[in-house]
Length: 374
Image (tube, rainbow, N blue to C red; front, side, top):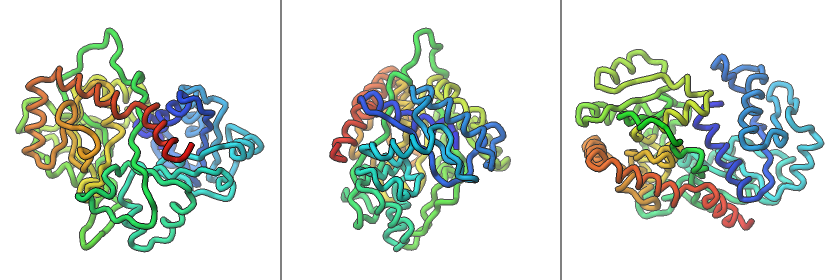
């Protein structure tokens, strides 16, 4: 779906690989009906989605290097069938971002096929439970990368075994996010952008329901606005008036995420205009100490905006304490915000430095390619 955060994620990969000197081709062939960004619905009409893809790829100089297969009639748009066959025949690597594509026979000719897992834990549990569809999805790849950077650590309880996972993280094109000369100072609010309720990936593991939804996690910090002086704002994709009323009564400012969903520049402006980010992590990531980190949070850091985010074990691999502070309880969250308020400029500088040292796209993707033997 063309939500701006996901679009930025993909563009960071495309531009990062391009800046490293690689020939890059974008293929969208998921077998799913497209999301219509104009009407906000899933539709059999691929026209609006095609227009969106075309606009996005022109931003990274790939206006003629893409193909989109319509799930309804199988028609290929963008490149011709002949061009796509040629691209697959000559490709050194196929990078399956978020594993949204089930690899078919035409993909298997690419010698290096990278499973790039941006949402860890669910797949590992399904494999441990014997889900053969998930096993087959991963087995079609030659290399497996995950945002679960704490996998295998003593405090991580994600079940591993069948596959070897290389740690990786969110690449960010830093110059895309730096504040521009003449920008107004950020407003006082700490913000985030999120979908409120998503239950399709909930799973039970060892007698516990591990949810994949922000609403559950925000309940644990509901009274945070009453504990801090800084305003807190949530840009939410939400269709629950009662939940909005509860959040508002607790002191949260709630604004609709919809206007940001199909506007990349508006999304980026929202991040830049924020003083920082406050957000929770989904229970699957946090409970099993996966080490997952948000690409949205990485963008806040790149903009020089400090972040206070729920601990998932990422502190084992990414420094935290200045510019980025992890929390487990509402008391820790309040203390973290107060600490940033006590020396905001220092934390803002530290945030930008963290992004430069740990999320620069060319460094992150150069390491990924090296780990894949390329």
